[in-house]
Image (tube, rainbow, N blue to C red; front, side, top):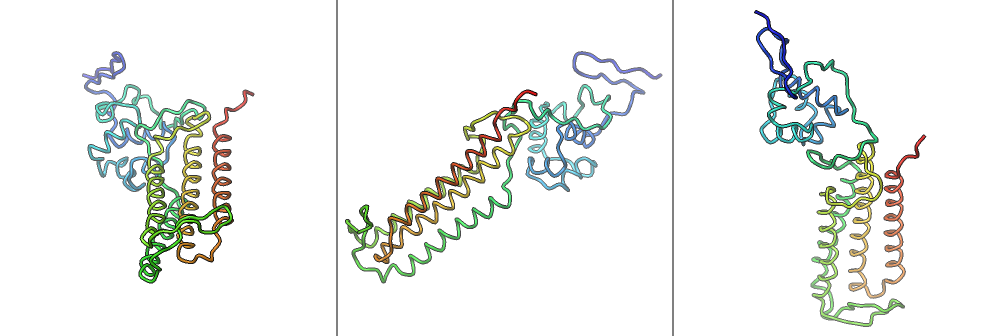
Length: 270
């Protein structure tokens, strides 16, 4: 005997002879389309490849429990709903349901912001600068005089001196500041962003901010690498180069913040 499907509250109670229930893979695909995400975008947020998402949706592979929980959070479902069924899935026709781009930003639950190629390049450049300076300091340290300049006045002349071991403090300050900024770049969810964050602009805003932070961090690493050199070569100028480093640093940061503000500026009502 064929019975129908009763709808009670927000759940479908399926009976014998009803339409076939979706598989987990079909349900993941449906939810992904409703979020307006490609397989690659979903893979980025889950920390897996596009091929892995494709296998999930084809039911040739199954997400592990950690990924199931993350998927449920992203799709704003319970894990039970993701595994066993969603109230309106029987009515789904496969049409993509993109999120309203003007809707308020839902937050970071289940989301990630992958590093792009530009950001990775900045990180590599900063590490190369600091690593190269470390190797150079190790190479020349024994040949340094016992006393080296440690401070310079506004005219660029040395006005304080210390032991040659003090050169490590200059380098370590730069390395610690660089590492701290890189940790901050890794966790965009703790940033206090200005402007109007929406589902349509949040990714652009946070990516722009991380681009800015990575560039300024690389400039800072270069500045501290240079500041160690006048202690080795007292004839090198320090005042003008320091002003140039600071000027470029501030210019890049201000331009980045202007870009972030414009991306987050509420759209005028038409």
